Amino acid sequence: MSDPSTTPGHTTQQEIDTSVPHSARIWNYWLGGKDNYPVDEEAGDAYTAVFPGIVTIARSSRAFLRRNIAYLVAEAGIRQFLDIGTGLPTADNTHEVAQRIAPEARIVYVDNDPMVLAHARALLYSTAEGATAYIDSDVLDPDAVLAAAAETLDFDRPIALILSNILGHIADYEQARSVVTRLIGALPSGSYLSVNDGSRGTDPEFERAQDGYNESGAAPYILRTVDQITAFFDGLELVEPGVVPVTLWRPEGDAAPKPIGEHGGLARKP
Image 1 (cartoon, one colour):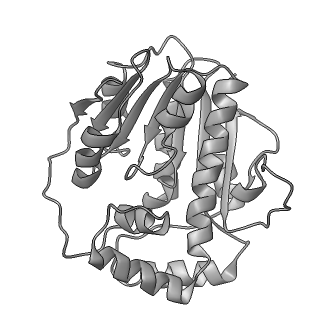
Image 2 (cartoon, rainbow, N blue to C red; image 1 turned 45 degrees about the vertical axis):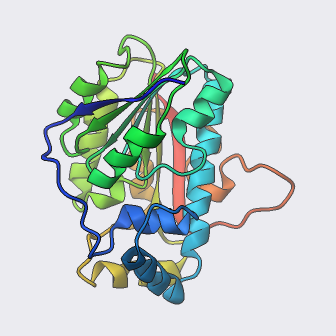
């Protein structure tokens, strides 16, 4: 196994503030991770007291990403990944899923959170045949992200762009669309876009809980309609079954999954 490389971006490194809850640490808590603090557990428990289904959403989102990556490597032949807004490492990180199937896979993670950076340095190890790198940068500066990613990824070969539960953090929808357009526009033909985010129109209880969280003064996360999420894939070729609740995207096993308020899809750039 080889160490990951860390590439500083344009953002200024900040100290980790353990006095206020943080969305990445709360998400880690819901996933069953240990990289969080009591303040995050309290906030997570307060949310689940209002809407217990958030734990299902968090874990279903992770499972959707795992199935996406497995498809991309095993069926689409992708060997390069740009994972933006990766959050704290947990089980089945992008590089782990990809490199189990193709040890030569190369993965670049992007985040601008100091705690994520610290854990990336410690935990995101690559196979000897492949590569894993971390970029300290912001999705709102796609040009900086692309420039730094080019140090590890070959932009003449297909790349899978992973945007998992990150676009909801961009409050302005048109700005989110612009970011996606800039990023996918820089990738060659045969590349893929994977997006999943919290959605409206499936679970009113979830919508009420998230709206209340956003009004609490915490950094907001915007739930979007299925049509809005689908529009992120404009100009691309959606992989079946298209944009659906993440539980229904190529589910595994015999159990019939239920729709949840989290939609996602995967699409190929022609």
